[in-house]
Length: 463
Image 1 (cartoon, one colour):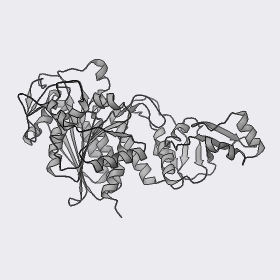
Image 2: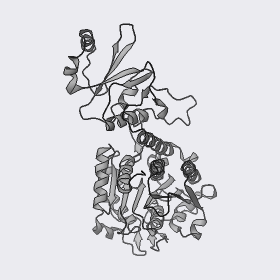
Image 3: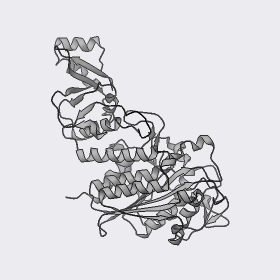
């Protein structure tokens, strides 16, 4: 991806952005031959439309690129595949945010998950770094997005709990962070019983674990990220159908997201103390699998009746959140591919946000709008907490009814956080069901740009 953003090169072909609203006035500045060529080729500056303007010597003098009037940030991503191989430079100086997006969308348009392809990947045109582009932001955002996509796209056979821990260790080594991993029966010894209960069915080769990454100065403000790391979800004894199991390699999407966000934070050397907690398991079927009706202990001391073994994500998150809350961080964020109910409510392209802090929620929503990273706040409606009541335990992991599934899941998690800690919970799809410019079908990062922006706003940057 980033190899397709280059320094200035002699002979780079000029890309001329033209908006439909300004087409006519721009046409008037062109020589008669150019106007005739545009008319003959019906160039109307529709978004994504491309027209090669010929040079008298037979090569391209420039290439016109149609842009929408609403500053679509993905505009240049839609152009990349339409251009012949070569190096291109955008004419003139774009405003800084547009320059950022031109570079980022170009880079993300060249992303491909090629790990299992026997032939080399496709080559792509290159873009000269636009003037005024924030290279650090573009670079870190592109790398974080690629990390998230790569992890989610990797099949579960090659990305189990151990491999997810290795990915965290590699990231930590790149940025001078520390990683501690609690494995298997060590989870019982260190009081993470719910994580152990969910993951023990996977057997000795794919033992559950808690991945604990720390970075930064101990006395700096604390940011803690928690990500659901279910590397494959069969549903347990409440077995999923084959159709519903098909995409369950993505059920560690929350873990992928917090690693991607951690990359951005560490690469920017933000002045904070970062902690990333990932409970990593496989929800398998075996004689060791938890059963519907079992009662599980948790790190916080609350007991949970297992109403459904396919609601396992919240079970592993509750232990990790209890540990996160113990330190009373200045900001706590968790991310999880948690409920189908959130997808029913918002579709696949909008991240569902639950938050106990109105200012934080507003900041996230505003950043999402500004950075083409949409989120939508759903309510932590406290009266629905009664739906999680259990006759035999402190609470059930599911409600008895078919309604408000995303809300009751968030309320379940809230039991392990407490109201005094600013907390944002994201229920995400982490997958593109169709391809769009810069966003191919497959694993996808959601709310990453928005959250990084909010973190910078709250904690600042190093001078």
